Each structure stands twice: as C-alpha cells, then as structure tokens.
Amino acid sequence: MGFALRYFLHARVCSGFQLLAEMSNLKTKVAQANLVISGEGQVDDQSFMVKVPIQLSQLAQAAGKPCYLLVGRQKGANETFAKQGVTAVLPIVDQVMTLDQAMAQGPANLERMADRLARIISQS
Image (tube, rainbow, N blue to C red; front, side, top):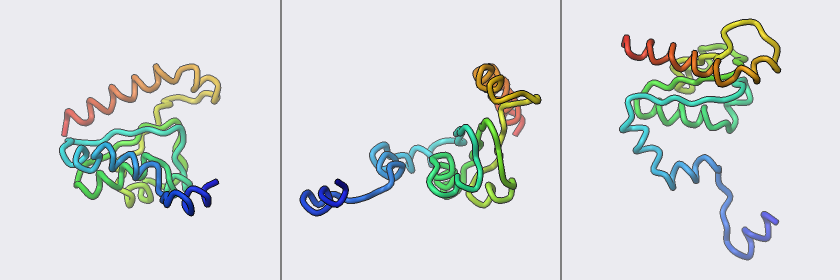
C-alpha cells in the first residue's frame, strides 16, 4: 500500500513526529517555552530510535531549554539521556511495587512526581 501511495499519488514517507511538529509549529513553541516536560511509560535504549519524548528533548536541547521526562521506568544511564537533551529522567514510582500496583496508582504517583518537579523548578 505504501508503495502504491508513493508511486501513484507521489506521497512521501516521513516521521509522524516530524509531521505533527511541522503542522503545530512545535519548534517555535519550544523556543518560546521556559522548559519542556514529557512522559513515557518506559525509556530505554530503544527510546533513541523514534520515541516522541527523545525527539522532543532534542528540540528542547537545540533551543537551549531544559527537558524533564516523567516516566514509569527508566533503563539506561542518565548520561546517555543527557546527550539527547534530557535534563533529568524522573521515574514516577517512588516505592517498591508491582507493575499492577504502579498502574493502579499511576495518577497518584504522577501527581506526587509533578509536585516534586514543580518544587525543583521553583528553586532554580
């Protein structure tokens, strides 16, 4: 189907993130922001391939803006994420729990982490 669209309709293949970023003028919006906050269930080595939070952190880095990722789980070194423009990866789970518990308590966990992040940001 992709071949047919490209051949007959001269469609182009592009990243969904890039398309939406262009359509929403995201680069300008990031440049106007004080900071960027994004989230993901899990960040790991695969995140550097195509995941939105990493692409967003790269936009933030290019604009000289801090970028915080609120995540359910982090795999990988902080330095690796920092090279991609991530100021800090902040797991929202703050105690030992099963995945089912983390999912059930997701909104409360996220709210606590957002409060901690707001306190960190207000101090800088």
